[in-house]
Image 1 (tube, helix red, strand yellow):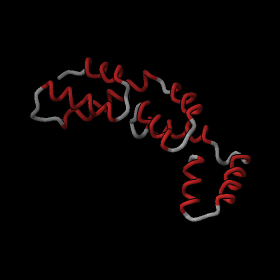
Image 2: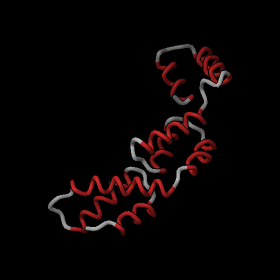
Image 3: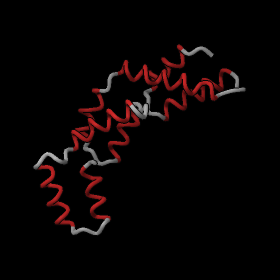
Image 4: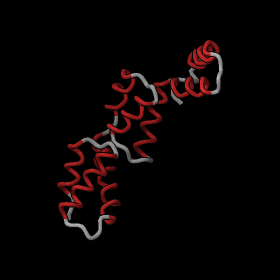
Length: 133
């Protein structure tokens, strides 16, 4: 969990704010709560198992309360070539679901699907240009 996640959960359970602050500080001092480590793990799991791209992961980390400095440091470490390969694999799996539609519509839907997954337009365009309709 991120620091913000933990703070929100404890406050939701009606714990005293001072106690929550102390617990979070103690956990951080013991290296049991570290947003940088959390961000690295989140990025790994979201890229490898959920098939998400940089933009979506960046948005999720922001919502989780991870600082912009950590996000800006960790997001560029996502390998663009691996991201392209994952996007292409997703497109190959999704394409057969677009039956009975003309090629233009298939391309449009596939592009929108990849954009929703958080892939940057240059990667989406590359996948669409190499795809056989």
